[in-house]
Image (cartoon, rainbow over all chains, first blue to last red; front, side, top):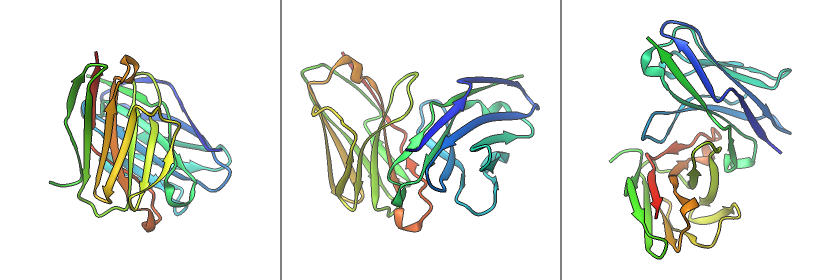
Length: 114
Length: 114
């Protein structure tokens, strides 16, 4: 069965500092992996996805994530945090045919200090 | 309208009321989903529809009744709810035949049961 673990329910960084949000997954087959972002009073928005092509995936707003099979990890990074990055971030995994069953992590809330 | 829309955005209802949530996707997708998002809990998949047919019912109580008249519209009928049903209800859609599996979310309906 597939599962997702996000390490740290809250992460706080200073503006301009590196953002690192951690995600580990479990899947019995090569997975599809996603990072979504949710701003207050909004739905989830896709940041980036891994679909077995390049292991380093670039997304919107300067975010990227690296798929590491040996570590079963898909951590999200951004070199320099901006105040507008403050939001909740969700890692998700899907390995079922058609992608109907996507499992989401519990989320990590990112705070950015001025 | 573009993307995935949900109405109403906010709903307050008593435990004896009957109400419905509406979701519409303007993306030409074939699959639609209902999720429940409660504070401090992971996103919970409730129902999945593929080409109007229900493919997943994640042990959801019968007081929640979904309806999918066509691939663009999804409803969630609510009756005799409990206070613990208060949450953000998110609708999503995806194009499963594309092989990319990402989901597009609406802004959600904030439901409060009194």
